[in-house]
Image (cartoon, rainbow, N blue to C red; front, top):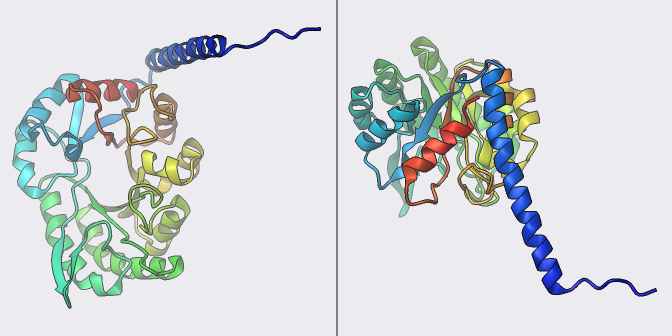
Length: 307
């Protein structure tokens, strides 16, 4: 019996058709999810924010003006000098950027407070307290109650010692945070692709740090892009550890791509899981727009995450 042969032409033709079918199916799923959310009465429960650094070619003033047209309520990772522009537009800053101070120790320059040089080093703590205290106060004065912070890189430090050191430093700021009602949020970042050697790179480590600090004013910024790379199980993690998360960031995987059907995460389901936890805060869009019209990319991401 002669078996039918599968030529390269047949294979390519069939593969192309399959890819087109899958793409159409994904597009339909995104649209159906939005419609279902609206019918279920949960539409609009996510507050939308955008990370300014993703739109470097667009002024803050223009980003605020454009964003208000499609229900953007916040622009984040901003410094105090940006607050007047933001407030002029009646927008919020859902996550204030970090303070930093450059040091030069024996010819080795550091930017204390930045991603590589955070709370996991005892020798950083005095400077961190000095630079965070005024920022926490200024943020509160402007009505912004979430400020980002970082663990720092391991640089040979084991995870247990990193936990101990971070807890010591963070506890020094908790009395002020509690008095002001401002939350200090440590971001979970991947150490596999973007931030090699970063210590707060898994949600269990971050959750343990929250337990050791022991204050409702210290939480985690759960970055969906970063944690998909490091540990996956995004929805299960949100359901299991949401009590430790003060804020969420988006981003397509791989490549911090747009969050549409061109990447592997299905954001409507993720947003629905967030809403189901009772979360009533902001979700910050932190993807890199690929198209020329970056505002159109942002608008689409807001629509995808409107559940």
